[in-house]
Every structure is written in C-alpha cells, then in structure tokens.
Image (cartoon, rainbow, N blue to C red; front, side):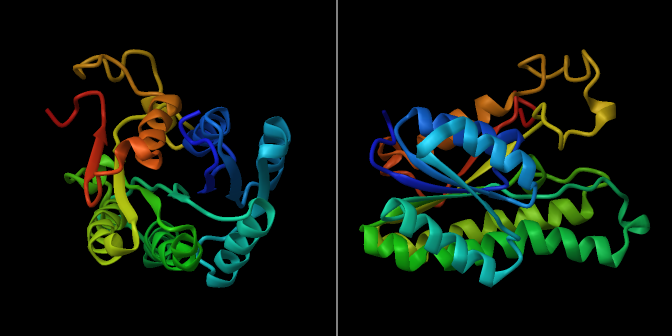
Length: 241
C-alpha cells in the first residue's frame, strides 16, 4: 500500500502506460481520477477499478477542462496529492515533411498540456501540504532521433519545464520529476517496430512494458522518493548506453 491515502490524477489514462499506472496506483491504495479523450476505454477502466477510480473526459490543451478535472478529483476524493502528466501524441515525420498544423497539435498536447496541468493542480496540492508531479517525457527528450522534430521538441521542452517547476515549487513541498521511456510496447509504438526481435540489440534485448514504466512512476509518486526532485529518470532497456 505504497500510495495508501493518496489521491492521483492521471491524464491519458484510458490505455497503455496511463492505464497501467492507474491499475497499479489503485492496487497500492490510491484513489485515482483517470482522464482522457478515449471515453469508452476510460469508462471501462474506471468500471474495472471500482470505487477507487473515476473517469472524466479531458482535453489537456484546455485550461477549463483542467480546472474541472482538478475540481472533480478534490470533490470526489477530498484532496489531490499526485499528478501524472501522461497524455501525449506521437508523430514520426522528417522536419522537411512535417506540417505546421501537426507540429502545433503535438506541442499543444505534449507541452501545453503539461504546463496547464502543473498550474492547475497547485492550489489543491498546496492545500494538501505538498505532492508529486510526474511528467512523462521520452528518450526523444534526452537525445535526437530522425523523424522526431516535432515530438522531440515537445519532450525536450517537458524536460526543461520539469526542472524549472521543481525549483519554483520545492518550497511548497511539491516535487517534480520527468520519466523518459524508450521503446515501450504500447499502441504509441509504431506498428513497424512491434515485430519480434526489433529491439534484440538493446542490452535488455526487448521493448519495455507499460507495467515497467508504471513501477517507476509509482516510486516517484510515493513518499519513497521524498528526496528526489528536478531529475529525469530514463527507462529504456539500455538504449542510451
């Protein structure tokens, strides 16, 4: 029960890494508000998790949606201790072929969504006496990858935003860290990269799982990581070696 008594808001929680985080958080004693734009999957997950979870439709690019989500978490569960900025969209397109419209959308969801989220939870976390914000970035926020101009720009920015927020909010007892997954076997991984043996050259010899990322996020959300803030945590099977 590593999150016993804590309340968490997880964006992009209807499937993949977000759903794995929600399941693990509930198993470890937390109450969880799952938000997403995938309503059928989000509602099914909340139904699976029972009274410890609720689902809300949530466009992370909308400040109004953020205010409503935080209000629901506090109204339903009494407070808010943890935010996981997990919602994100992915594109693999060379800069020369990228459209400005798609670039804008990726920045809106991946970066603006994270920025809005940090701002939205501050009053509730301060009222709770502190908290933990976990921003899901990417290995594309650690080093450059061809075809990741838009996505990489958003994830590098999330890494920088994390460090600044941690410095600004530490005096409020709010820790802010980023998680940088490599190849993880979820729907966001391009289909061409899902073939068996694709990642055999990694030290780990395979792609990671959503559950493995969730275990790292759980640690950062819990009091076990109470002296860890402003840091990036790589979970990539050794691709950065």
